Image (cartoon, rainbow, N blue to C red; front, side):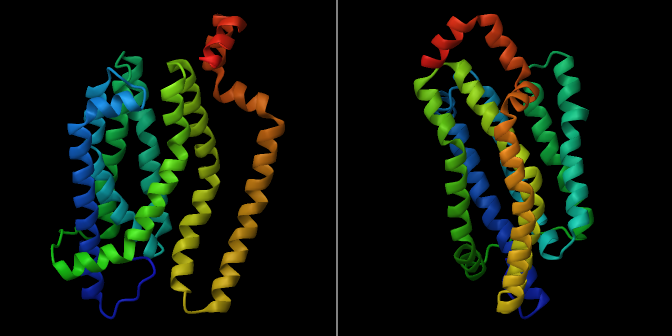
Length: 274
């Protein structure tokens, strides 16, 4: 969708609606699979006993699919200011919903409800900025065309997702819940820190390159320019995180470190060894 050229606006809109249909179809199938196999999935990720939380959390998947299509539309139109405002609304939900609920004693449900609200709040905002409400279309030609143009990206996303979470899956099989928690928080913290910078580059990069696919000189110029800017930030960031790892751990894992201090060095060593 980002890089394809359409002959008419009508053709573009029909493929955009087809993208929404494919996204909704896959999201509904995934939601149903999670609802049906909630117990095995909870055991696999090391959260046995929290099946109800998994079930409720899965209900946000269709809304995520809708939001992703609208965000792709805004990016294709280079409306990054609108994308920024949507992200601000998304990031504000933990402060407006999650933290107050946690203080009121909602426990893990505060995270679930906050995440669902984060997805829900984006829907009307995206409708406003996109200035259109898409209706799913189920034409065989359109759906086939959309799927052929996007299946590589779907496979890429699955590979990235698997590489991100494989360490957590392995930890759930061989280590205690304390170690699993450390692995999860460590991965999410590192990914969040780097995504703060990389997302700002990749969002613009993919859209720009898709528009310049027929301009070899302009394609290389944009690619190398953004690559240089990214390296100038991410490489020093990685080096700094390595040499000041103690400070990073103290800032982001204070409560976890405190728990291990209370457990004592002997108990911590025992937990690490499983």
